[in-house]
Amino acid sequence: MKMFNNLKSLVVGLGLFALINPFANAQIVVKGSDTCLPISQQEAEAFGKKGGNVTVTGGGSGVGIAALISGTCDIAQASRPMKFDEKQKMSEAGKTAKEVIIGYDALAVVVNPENPVTNLTRQQLEQIYTGKITNWKEVGGSDMKIVVYCRESSSGTFEFFKEHVMKNKNYATSVLSMPATGAIIQSVKQTKGAIGYVGLAYVNKEVKAIHVSYDGKTFVEPTAVNAKNKTYPVVRPLYYYYSINNEKKVKPFIDFVKSDEGQKIVDKVGYISHL
Image (cartoon, rainbow, N blue to C red):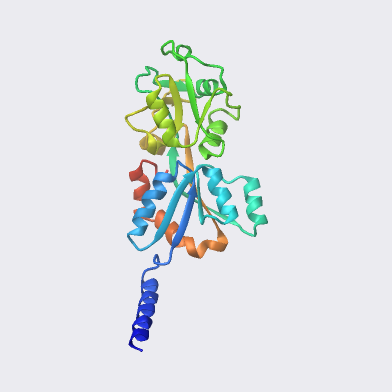
């Protein structure tokens, strides 16, 4: 009888804890964009200290959205908007997607630090990625073959770069597809003639960020400051998607990410909280 009373007290105590702490029962799975990965990991860690339980994995925006449709994740993190056909599949699964902007990214084009080229126009980037420019000497650099890296096609960054920088031209068949953003950083670091693109938070001293121009005159470095003052031309929102049917479960975490504390984490990671 005493054991039963103790058990009863424990259950009541846990129930009260859940009422006092709204994060206590949040067991949330976040999946998708590699760009969003550093944000979600840091947010999950901070949220965990408040009693929440969030697991985060990458794989690409398309992978995350597919997992949301199939019900194997609660939140899809994406570096591009959800497509019409993805929304249709959500609808067919009896779900409605809710979109939340969690921050912004100044998408950075990076080269090896030994590469003397610092400035490239949007048109030059398009020609490099479509295979029309193949040697660095064609853009004011050394006589050296350009080794071009991109993300795989399931990546939101792959699609954003194709749409906004390449103006929907096709990638050249010689472009090397990488499964993760970290792999692009590693490859560019190790290859003198390499070029790639990554989310701003991934830029480090092992690579050099290119100053980009859309008008052919003003070349701007990808930084949080230049994204905020709108001088850097390649800026995009970062998204969370979830099913409205599941709103009660995910809302505590979403609210935390959108809070002042959560947005400070976005800035700390290396992205931009507000534009």
